[in-house]
Image 1 (cartoon, helix red, strand yellow):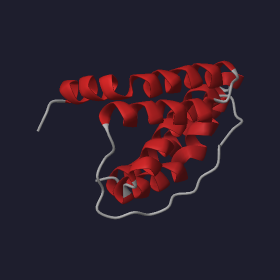
Image 2 (cartoon, helix red, strand yellow; image 1 turned 180 degrees about the horizontal axis):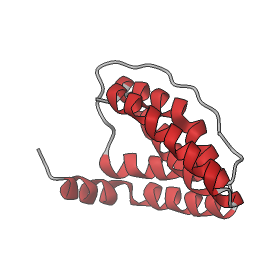
Image 3 (tube, one colour; image 1 turned 60 degrees about the vertical axis):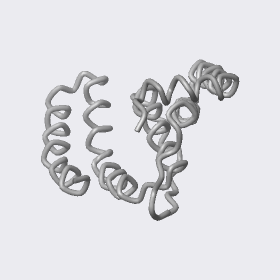
Length: 142
């Protein structure tokens, strides 16, 4: 099996124009503050550079852009990458993991919102809830 470096090198030569177009779209979307879309653009770029993951089964995953909240810049960017990578590759195990992680998402959102608001006490409480339920995510994602 070829190394990741060789795969990226080959795919970059084959798909250079498309990869660069995705990068340009990601930059434009990020500048326009459409972070979820920027994340899906990056995921497209990663799949073109690395190649798709071959999965044995397929399952549809439907989510919507979770915007807006104060951490949308980072969280939605990563969510977009993760969503598009999963959607393009039809990975049921990761979809199950993703669904479990999204159940814990409100706790993370509350923690970050409280931190930005300067409410340390509530932020610590939300982080504690996040940490307590994160074990379920880890178990699901094994």
